[in-house]
Image (spheres, rainbow, N blue to C red):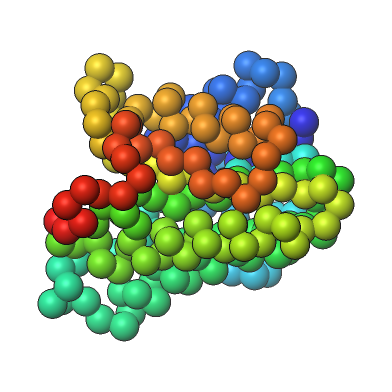
Amino acid sequence: MKVIIIGAYGRIGSKVTEALSIRDHEIVSVGSRSGDIVVDYTKEHSVKDMFEQTGRFDALISVAGGDSRFRRYSDLTDDDFRFGFERKFLSQVRLVMIGEKYANDNASFTLTSGFLSHYPNEASIATGPINSAVDTFVCNTARLLPRGIRINVVSPAPIVEPGQERQGLVTAVQTAEMYVDAVEGGFTGKVLRAWGGLPLISEKGVF
């Protein structure tokens, strides 16, 4: 399969690239500063240019990170929420809505959200709701995509080095396996939670 990986050089993206490469998939590496293609996925024209360069594809994975702001609730501004909405939510939605036209039949999209939707901390108030929005978009859109196109989302917990993983902490390799499953599996509309053994909802429900 021809797989576009956006964020291919990041901590998770590099492991996703390795895992799919050894399975003999054709990888198109995309980054904001380097890669087979350079893209600013917050800009519609840049995303369109990217797809014009890639042409038809079988899978797209978005593993972009650092796209929300972490500040205490009392310090948050409209711009902090707008930053996360534009970069983590709308930008990933744009990849699907524009990319659908270039996707082959039975292609797949895999997006990224995060566990702070369910496990907030004092500085995640502008982040958790955006993660939830990405999850909801995927679940609600899956049945609407044409031509057998699938869409899923991976929700990672914090990434740690091998040997340090425990409940609520996962390695990049463990998380990458879920992206591979989303590409090679036949399911759609699922949130794959790489949460390191945490239950679906926090028992405490607070910080």
